[in-house]
Image (cartoon, rainbow, N blue to C red; front, side):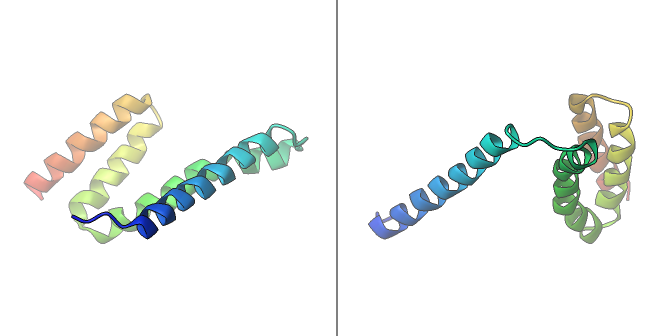
Length: 99
């Protein structure tokens, strides 16, 4: 493996820009005076992004993964995060074995 300075500079630059945008977002979010409706919209962004990332792979890979995603979503309404992760892992393994 060879060391390429240009690639290293590009990676460090991308990391810096990513960190700067996140830090700026956190700094600005604390200074905004939002209405309750706008605050609710901002609070809905993380779960919406998570669903947008997970749904395509859960629906495109097979029945076992889709079923495990449904079971995990149902578990998320009742269990804490660690329990949801455990249910999801067990569900996908079990469904891959039996489906």
